Amino acid sequence: MTESEQPDDREDAAAEPPREHVALSDPEFKKQLATVIPHLRAFGRSLSGSRDLADDLVQETLLKAWAARQRFQAGTNMRAWTFIILRNLYLSQMRRARFKGSGTIWWPIGCWRRPRARIAMSS
Image (tube, rainbow, N blue to C red; front, side, top):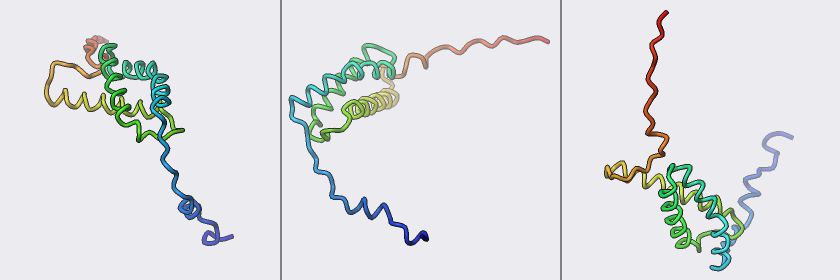
């Protein structure tokens, strides 16, 4: 069989009908959202380095996720979807804080460590 005679997978994919968007009911969405809160807090804390900042990020993430609940596709990964929201919020807050020069530090705490002094070695 030559290359031109092999079936093209792209044609098969194009022939499939598009999936219909199915949103979760509000109670089901709320239930799934509640299960990811501890994971969001851990992820927020790993990004910000602060429990308080992580809680603020999680709260904003939950509000944004609830506002966009009709766009969430039933059967997809709620944890991944909310992690993306949280990460984007964190990056936006970092950019905003850097641009405004605000007093709130959105950088991870580990970035603010003083570099170690170098010890000169004599030979």
